[in-house]
Length: 272
Image 1 (cartoon, rainbow, N blue to C red):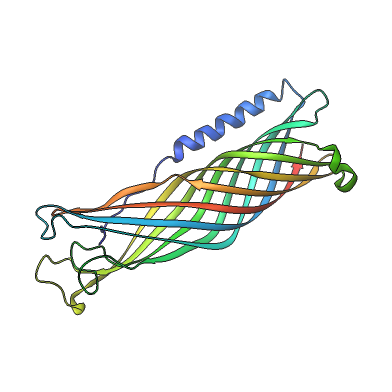
Image 2 (cartoon, rainbow, N blue to C red; image 1 turned 180 degrees about the vertical axis):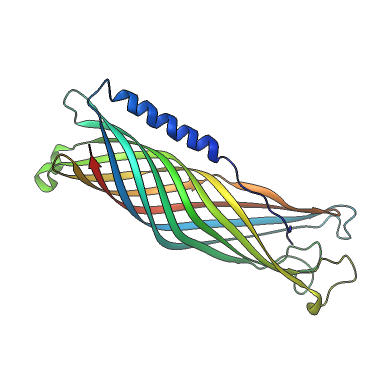
């Protein structure tokens, strides 16, 4: 069973402030070293995996006091994302064969995972008051914002095959905006038990912000002084988000969401 009101996520202001601070620091470094700013556009094929778990905890005065029901489900889907990025690259080493980049990006996503909790309880349909009702649920990823640091080198052994090419490692933080939705059908009456014709159907939605970390590898092929093409593989893990979705008459329903991404990206970069 669920609450009829769900709250909003948090953390956007802190992460946006951190991203802005890192970019300003990189800009200041431009006066002390032969660094370069760059902009770019990216296209991403991504697998989005999400998990939804809930518990129903019965305490006095609930008629099911002492009963605790747990349920959970996970689902994944593939889709695409498009984004823009802005970064600053600083050469390292006497010959500049290594580099360090700080990069900000914003992406739009079009991917939704959908699943179903089957319900847990001792009634035939598991949707009486105090049981864990069956839920149809979905988590839609809408937008994300990231700060990424890249450490790379120009391996000599690749030049005969690929020309001016760099390999790099990447790591960073992301803020992911999502929308969580539930459709339910159950009994809100304490007693007697509801018959199927008396069950109430409804839907709930929750805007949820996730803070996530990301790591991966990339390959960059340069075309002249100003243009480059990057291919990247990234894994992104989300920090768990939990909330109390129902708390009334001795019945509490804590819920939790988490997720992760596996991304294949292609970036077109223009250096200044």
